[in-house]
Structure formats: C-alpha cells, structure tokens
Length: 244
Ligand SMILES: [Zn+2]
Image (cartoon, rainbow, N blue to C red; front, top):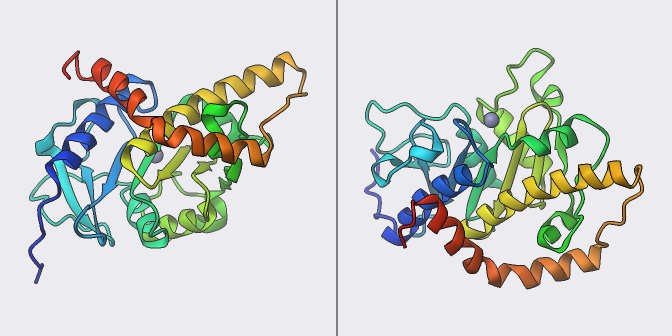
C-alpha cells in the first residue's frame, strides 16, 4: 500500500519548472538531461518531470518518486531511463536537496581525458572539492549503452561522487548536486562555463594554468552561495519569456 504523500510546497514546484527552463535556456540541457528536487516534506521522496524535453516542462509534468525510483503518481506517463541517478544520490547524500544531470558539451572532454576539471575562476569555487570521473566500465562492464539505467549503476555513480558537488560521466555527461535547487542550477551552469574557460586557458597557456587553490575555492564558494538569487531572477526572466 502506498502511503499518502503530502503535497510539496507550490513554490518548490514553481522553482523546479523554472529550473528545467533555465537549464535549457542557458545551454546546459537540450532535448535530454533532467533536474530533480528532494521533496520538502518527505525526504524519502523526490520530484522529477516525466520523460520529456526539459525546456517544455510545466507543473503538470512533475512526478513524485520514492528512493527506489518508483513514481507514485505517474499513471501511464513515461519515466526518464536515468532516474536512478537521482534516487541513488539522494539515498547516499542526505545533504543533497537537488540534482542536475546533463550532457553539457564543454564538460565532455574532461571526462574523456586525463585533464581534471578544476576551478579556474571564483564562480566555480564549488569545484575545489574535485570532480571525480565515473567510469561506467568499472561498474557495468564494457558493453553498456553508457546510460545509468539501473539502481546498481546509480549506486556506483553515487559512490564515485562521494562528497563532491560534481561528477563527470566518461563519454556521457555530468551530475551536479547541491543543498538547494537554485544552487544546483547555478553550479550546473558554471560547471559548463568553467569547462569552456579551462579548455581555452589550457590552449592559451600551453597547458600552464593557475587555478584557484583549495582555500580560495572554498572561500569563493561560500561568498557566492548567498548571491544565487540574483542570478536566478535574471535566468528565470530570460527563460520564462520575460515573466516575473
Ligand atoms: Zn544522460
């Protein structure tokens, strides 16, 4: 028997719709990728759209899942194949309130080479904790379709993420987590920008680049976190066609 679920805060649902639109508008997701938020009243559940392009998500498309990735209220609607990314990370990381999974293009080379994704400027201080690379062959063998389509693969990814904010999926994309939905969106956007800038700096500097050190990265991340609302309002204005 499924226990009744308290309705999530309507403001959280609004933010999750906006998060989908913003991530599309800012070039982090395209027709693929997804963003979820932990349920504000039931930490053993999370909110995620039905299987569809993030840029088209409305409030009616948001479904509630348990931590085994069963949808409580899906009916006949299709689910994202890679929803196990979300359920297994929420299980492993009680501090995480939101997760973005994308194939944001500039990050891909860092998952496929030995070059580490590191904080090149203050907006990406959250990368100071490292961005481990998840090698799916270690968990799924050498013949997967690269997708995190099972609880076991999701759990292996969560283990590789450890306590970091970002993990790279070799040959696939990345996962970004945060203690709030708006901060997860912020981090996903600046993960993409950092990757682009780092690649440029590596070329320009012929491999010699000065990154933020650990203390600078931590201090910059702490300074930026309270400022997320300012960027959010701008991104939302752009993504939602000028509304609010
Ligand atoms: Zn994917």
